[in-house]
Amino acid sequence: MTAVLEAIFGNAFWSAVVKTVVVFAILMVNTLFLVWFERRVVAFMQNRIGPNRAGPMGLLQTLADGIKLFFKEQITPRKVELGMYLAAPVAAMIPAFLIFMVIPFGEPITIGNTVVTLQGADLNVGLLFILAMSSLAVYSIVLAGWASGSKYPLLGGVRATAQMISYEAAMGLALVPVVLFASIQIADGSVGVGTMSLSRLVELQQGSFRGFIPGWFVFWLLPSFIIFMIAAVAETNRAPFDLVEAESEIVGGYHTEYSGIRFAFFFLAEYINMFNVSAIAVTVFLGGWLGPDFGLPSGIAWAMPIMWFLLKTYALLFIFVWLRATLPRMRYDQLMTLGWKRLIPAGLAWLILFTLVQAFRSFGAPWS
Image (cartoon, rainbow, N blue to C red; front, side):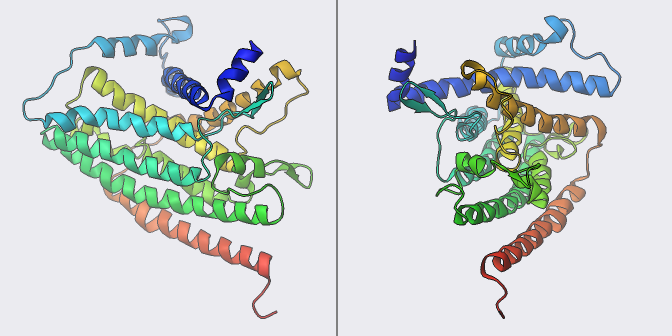
């Protein structure tokens, strides 16, 4: 078995194929579990029962819903722009899958003489790739709203454009100090080159400060982490920032005219993006898969980093669910005010302050 795995992962083509299939399977199964997780947590917080019929503790309820959507009749309105209308759900799924391809979800493992990274692709510009893919996601929403030939989906698409552009800027500003801090860590001789590579960022967070504080970037870049998480909630159109699909104002927003498997694609993309932004925050700020191994035998020790990665990610996903269960939806003017007048100025101020502090640290005072 080891020889077969070594032959597969030793070949670049088959290694890429296997990793792509594994990432696809992880995201699909995780989405099924995440929807169940959200329903159960919200039900607990609001003193309701939640799914409890299909399967043990209702675990198969999401699978039943997916099967229902797959076989449900797909209705196509008369006035749609058919090509764009059909392309929009697919365009929503592709960036969601590609983002997770560059996120390391476990420690590299050795099979024979071959080192296998638990990551779809280790890009040296991983952070830039993530920002590029997340900015492409808005096109699917705009296309869906415009191509539906209805005013309510169009309004939802226009809202999505303004909202995602606003909070994309804040998210990008939150990640710039990470790159600067990683560059300084490398200058101190910690790891090597490739400061925008997500695997390198995880490596730089190894060790501890004075023996008891983990070397996670969140302890040094807490304002960046807070800004990133607020922007991530808005980027994924989650409550209290879900103005894109506000039922009381614009019915279902950009996907009002979609049904069946086409609607399921949008649904999947939203939950995959929730998982993606949480995984990015874990990788960049919370040490990624780093954690104690408890001295487990080598045969199962490889699973501990994956477990730590999932535990941290679901801790952040719990915050997403908590916000949905407790906070009311914001008004649209409040949403834009928070993005343009609060988060972006705060991100710029923190970036300037951080840059000045690191410049003094690296080069000393200019008058000395």
